[in-house]
Amino acid sequence: MTPLFRAILIIASIGTLIGIVRKVRNAKVQIESSVFWIGFSTLLLFLSIFPQVAEAVADLLGIYSTVNFIFLFVIFVLFIHQFTNSIKISQLEDRIKELTQEIAVRELRKKDLESFEEEKKNEENNSNRM
Image (spheres, rainbow, N blue to C red):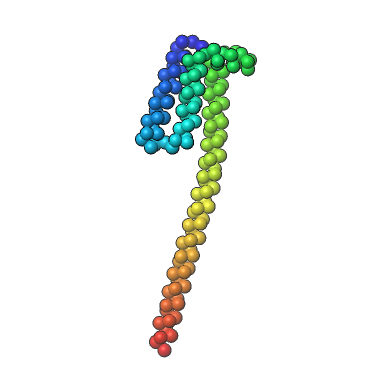
């Protein structure tokens, strides 16, 4: 791994860590969501500070270059993260649909109850007039 690539990786990792911590402090990101990014940045920082680890894993996996391993690793991790986010979004969309239907049913019942009470009142008024 070249010194320039290591420096870029260190700067990007530290920048990401600082950015996530600021977002958490300003309550712009939930802590649960930021755990992934903090862990991911820390791992990249670790790999950039100790490139021997990345070199050993690349050799173990038969990857020609350490840089190729790091790019492949980043792509894989982000792919998995995107997949889990897609699952969460799908579940949230289903939940929103259920809640919308529940609200619609409650409003319909409320209108039905109001119209029933109004009809009952009208019947009482008509029977009192006679």
